[in-house]
Length: 363
Image 1 (cartoon, helix red, strand yellow):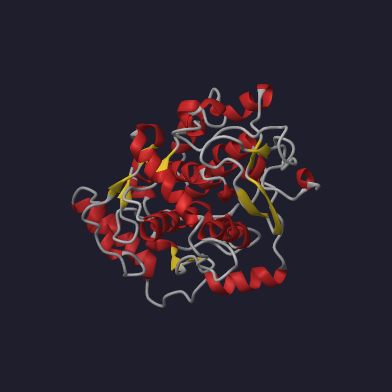
Image 2 (cartoon, rainbow, N blue to C red; image 1 turned 30 degrees about the vertical axis):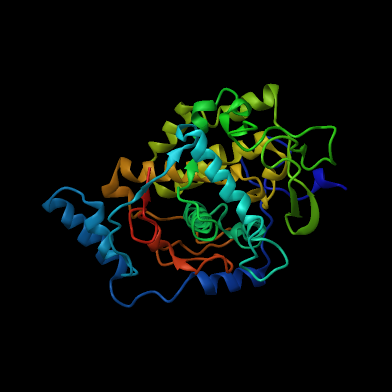
């Protein structure tokens, strides 16, 4: 097995570019037709934003009042938004409840009609559909909806009573391999054992915790069953990646006023530092096989939420950049978020505000 040489989200060096395969011309044409619905003849978003700005002159900013006037016209107020919490703040019982719900997905039939479980559906869709969001305006938006869909699966298919948790790796920047998420009893197990299994992007089989020797089906596009693998970075490499998630580095990103700069800056630094540190399956587009993926992306979503609320007058409705990876089409709030059958495709405008009735959460 030549797994270390496979195409991967994580390159072998430490440059700042994420090596994404260029989609085919046919794929981009189809994607453009799906994402870019016909633009509204009336003033649409421009008038909306102008009305919002004028409203600010009349009084203080009120997120919940504003969500009733989204471009899609489909959102309403969430009266009791859930609070997503940091993993280490959960009680032992709450952590076990979350882990049990994740395990439940492994015995739940595929939502895609494939010969696999609902657990497998998430890495499958992230690989087959989600690639277009990387390196584009859709990165944070697509993943916000993706993890929301995962949360709904935990709650609706597996009777989980809680909500997604995030891993604030900014607290662990000096050595993320010692973070509590890797605990074998109250976390997701630790490093791979170099003596067990074949190498998967410098990782080996996880042998402790609730996901020990978990069989996963895919290596990106290839059906190739193997054990869930990790291979923690160490020494200079570990220190180098830690610099991207130290609090000072995150604060510099939060000070950026432009969405495109913040979105791409976050993707190319803190986002990629974690798979470059954990390696193994976390390094692939099928990274959602590692359950810590969802805590990682909930943290990224929390940073976007924080960025939006640092200056809501300017940032709540900011959404710019390119529509998709490899496209030159300007991004729009009316772009479609494609979910490949896991959930209905919706407009970006529908997930911009987390306190809507659709998303219904905050941090």
